[in-house]
Amino acid sequence: MPPLPTPPMMRAMTSYAVLWQGGDGPRMSGRLEFEPLGLCLRGADEQQAGVELRFDEIVSVERGPDVRIGPCRAIRLTSRTAGSFLVASIAGVGMLSDILWRVLGALPTASS
Image 1 (cartoon, rainbow, N blue to C red):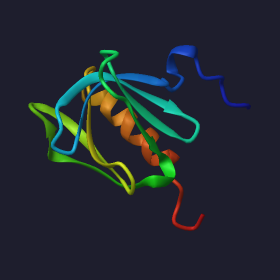
Image 2: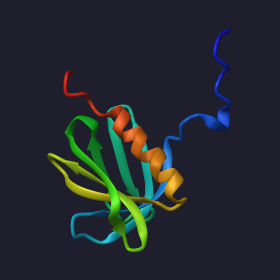
Image 3: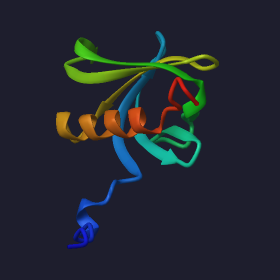
């Protein structure tokens, strides 16, 4: 029997409402957008600069109880060129897990 098609509401999202912080910089609110070669963190305000992180530049992805933006659980993405970023989902831990698995699934493998 062939697999059932994925209902539209179950397909992976391409944009997430997030809080993010680069290094010791200010906390930003905005969105994380998945693109073919990486992800973009965009501020909610036009005055906020966006950040692009290519998947082939991400050297580590970390999640743990102490990785937080204020009270919100977050993941830490570390890039060779852009440094370290904390990302927390405004929608909660479930969406953060979705973001985490999407990033991990997009990273190049060690054998590539």
